[in-house]
Amino acid sequence: ICKYFAHWRMKGRTIMEKIYALVAKTEKLNYVLVLGLWVLGGALTLVGFPWIVLAILAMHIPETIFIGIPTGKENGNSLADSIALCMTFGFLWWMPVKHKLLQK
Image (cartoon, rainbow, N blue to C red; front, top):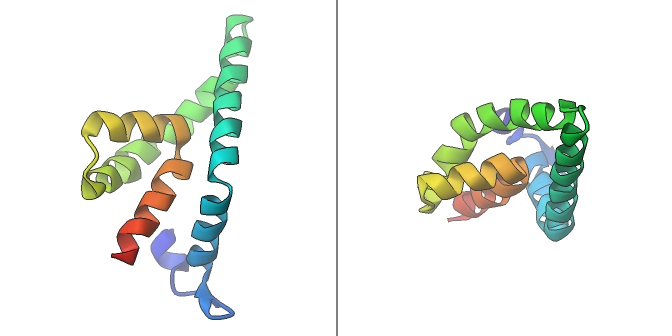
């Protein structure tokens, strides 16, 4: 998907550059919100509503396999770090890393 949108331009910048910039600007807030979602999902799982955690896992497992691990390897992260960070934060982790790698 990233490669498909990478060539679209908006006022001199690609759409992906704008998305990378937005994610980078709000990075700390995004991490807090994601951790809050995990805590909420965990609490609801304890009372019999596991669907939030299952939805997060359903999204993050393929994302980790196909994007997170290769991006982490390319950035010099260990396999364990790449899995943990991508499973926890998803694209909020790998998108800034990928952007940094593309800038090199």
